[in-house]
Every structure is written in structure tokens, then in C-alpha cells.
Image 1 (cartoon, one colour):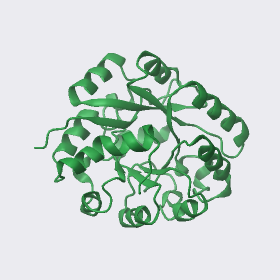
Image 2 (tube, helix red, strand yellow):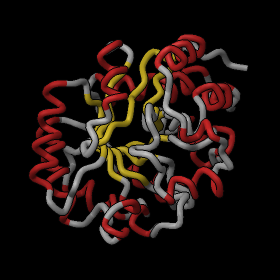
Image 3 (cartoon, one colour):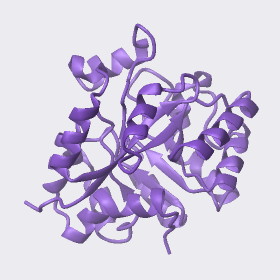
Length: 280
């Protein structure tokens, strides 16, 4: 088995639930899709997360936060160890964007933010694919801030409309915003081949395997990682949905050369999220 020397986990959830009760869609994902236990919804413990990261060689983790709640738990992690943790920001109101973009700008100015995130199936009743003009203020602001945007792609786990997350919508986005650093989040099932073709076509388009067990990644994606896509695929666990331990252990068992594995687990995220790099 290849030894993992270093990794960056690009999606960790410090708190999965806002308020007293989890939303129905999250319960459905836990019970019907991932068959998860109570740990699926548990808040992360700082010491346990750091210990797991140290044991696995995870040098950094990006913690999901929400503009609507300010997610104080994630901010506390960042305040304790800004060299280990940064933020991924979600929860934007794209139908009334000005206030959200103002808060986003302030957040980027005052905290280490690695990306801003939107799940097209999860808001607006799934009526707005990423090519819709309601996203354009976000794309423009992200280009201005040189901030990557992550967008859920692939059929969602909960019973929500899946069509808005078809990667084909990103074809028009990438054509209209060539400066935009864009990541397909949560894989692209069942549209893997389409996602790969789009990454070949567009320099700044990448894919993150968050919420995907590495042992179930399709051979077409692994082939792309070994060949034309060595700098395109980014690792993330989506912990506690899938643990760092499970996903990194499984990644180390993939049939990938050490250089390709290191790019997947560390190098691509380091360049794309932390050093402002793009593929040439």
C-alpha cells in the first residue's frame, strides 16, 4: 500500500445541524443514502479532529460555515489554529444577493476563506441551475476577490431535483466567466464522463470527491487522474458524512502512482485553494 505523507481535507463539517433539529433532507441522507449512525450529525470536537489530522498527515482542513448563522464553531477552530484551518462559506441568498455579497466580502477580509459554496438542488426549490443569471453577481464577486466557487454536481442524495446539478450547466458558466476558479463538489455521478470532458475543455474547472468513498470512484475518473487530469481532482472527506480516516485509508489503496496520489490528496488543493494557481 502506498504511504500517505501529506493531505489536505477540503471539506469538513464542524457542525452539521443548525438549531435544535436537523432538516428532513439531512435525516433522509443519513438514513437512506449513507446508512449513517448518530455520529453523522454530531458536532466535531477540536482535539479529536486535530488528533485525527495529525495521525493521518492532514496538514490543513477547510471547514464549512454558513453566512446565515456565522457558524461560530468553525470560527473557533480557525481562531485556535489558523495555520491548520480555513473556511468554506455557504448559505448565500442569490435571489437577494447584495447583503450576502457584502457579508462575504467582509468575511474574506477578516478570516481565511478558501472558497464559497452553493448547492443548486438545495435552494430555490431546485429551479436555478448554475447557468442562471441569479448566480452572476456571485461569480463576478468571486472573480473580483479571486475566490474559488464550489458547486454541487451529480444527483443529490436527498429527494430533491437533480437536474440543476448536471455538469452541463457549467459549460456556459466557464465560457462566460473564464477567470472564475470553479470546482465541481461531491463528484458528478452519473455524469462522470461529461464532467471529465468539461475539465479537459476548461482550464479553471476542477472536481472534488467530497462525500465519495474513494474505493467507489469510477475507473474513468481514476484513468483521467493518471493521465490528462493529474492536476484536476481534489480530495475531501465531507466528515462526518465520511470520516477522514476511512477516505484517506481508501485513497492510499487506489491504483495510483505516488505522484498522482500526492496531487490528489495534497498538491492540487495546495495550489488551487492556497496558492492561487491555475492549470497550464
